[in-house]
Image: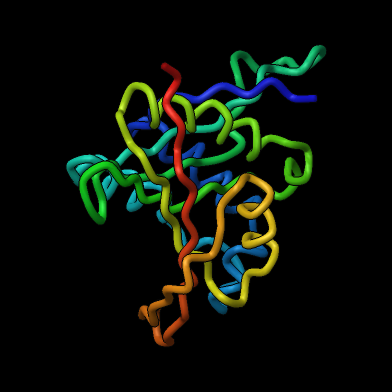
Length: 176
C-alpha cells in the first residue's frame, strides 16, 4: 500500500501538476476535452495562490526502489478552501489522482491525512463538495469516505455548457 504525503504547492510545481493533469485524460473528457489544456497547471496554481483561504496540496508518493529520479513523485492534487461557503466549512474543490495511480488507495490516504488537520488545526466542522452528476465514480469515492448527498444541487457553467453539481457533506470530528 502506498504511503502518501502532502506538500503545499506553489508556482514551482506548475509543470509537475500539468503532468498529473495530462495523466488524467478521463477527467478532461468529462468536459469534452481530449486532454488537459496547455498551461492549465500554471493557471490553476496561480488562482489557488491568489485566493485567500484556498490551498493546493500536492499528493506525493515516495520514490520507488530502483527509480533513478531523485525525490518523491507528484501524483495528485487536493484543492480546498477554508471557511467557504461559510465559517467553519471547508469546500473541497478537487481530489485528483493521476490515472495510472488510481484505485490504489492514494486519494483515500490523502484525505485521511487532510481530514484530521481540517478538524483539529483549521477548526473546520464540515467538509462540503460538489460532484458533477455525470461523474458517478467520484460520487462513489466520496461516499466511501463518509460523505453524504445533501439534496442540494446547482447548475454551473463549464466552458460552453452547463453541468449540475450534486452537493455532498461530511461532519468532521475533532480529537479532544
